[in-house]
Length: 287
Image 1 (cartoon, rainbow, N blue to C red):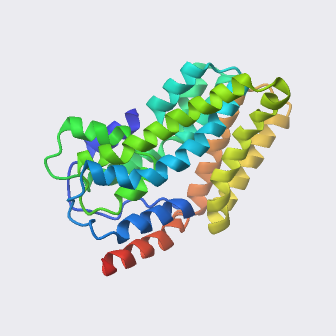
Image 2: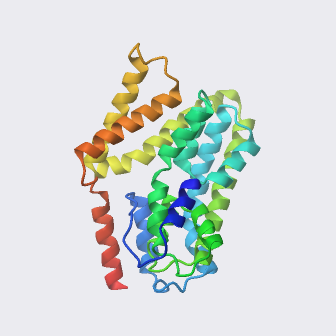
């Protein structure tokens, strides 16, 4: 949340720019759908339009958050705590990573891990700040910052100008879907017999895999960086000299090492935005 607020506050209003494009097939499909609608354009979309655009995101979030609730309940998290976590974080990858660290780490490890996992939101919010309606108040920026997620950001990129009230409508149903799905999953995890709830811990790894695979298939640099992270994590776990390091610190070290090597090997980026940018440009031309 702090990263989002900093990003939106530091970069003031300015001309619309391409910014960061999320490289995931589902997110690009959402972006393409909303950009084709005639009511897009110079920011006339309001709260009701945001609600309509948020429906498909909310449905997806509800499904994914059930898996999160099940997995977190399996390692002993209370339902109320999970509901508060989902309502205040809105970060699938950050929450999954956080649950994994909390299960066997310290608060410092948790803070650093979620910082690294969610660092992309700083870049997204800085890019989004260039599309905010001129004169957007600090309160309006805080509202927009609260709801910046990968999918919501992708939809907002379909606007030349983003109004705070549209962003509020866009995030309303996804927040409800993410939080309610978490509660459903957590309650189900509490009532399921141990023979079923125990294996739910594997959902943490399944969800991470589902997040990484689409980008890995589309980009060789991403595949190499992902492989480097896996190798670094394995070495930290199996090498006697580092095997005693706690899980949270292993995640942090592996992330930093893989990211640093990736930045050195691929200074021009992963190439994932090329197709997305072309698609968005094509849609703008036909609008």
